[in-house]
Length: 142
Image (cartoon, rainbow, N blue to C red; front, side, top):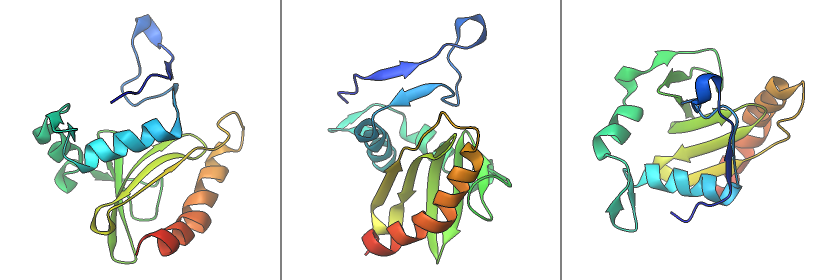
């Protein structure tokens, strides 16, 4: 996928955090992850991630209600699902506003990065979700 600039801090006992905690990537590379997921795990005609795993990631039955993220979100396998004005939204969320947001029926992927080195990261990410994301969807989600 030609993703080369990655920094992922190791956690306890030398393992990487499976949820991506401490993972740093360029926005263009986050977009590639969104495209990979949108194409059911296939990149340039080659299956990189099992289609069955992608189906499991986004299966509503494998998600539970959560108070994090967009209103009425469900969460499972580190991915969230919600709805915005009749559109299903799947999204990955990092601290302070790192997002991969996919709106399948609009064929729209939105990637954002924010200042993650801030004590008000939760407020920053909620401000994005509630104020800026709706504007982006309106503008680009034809």
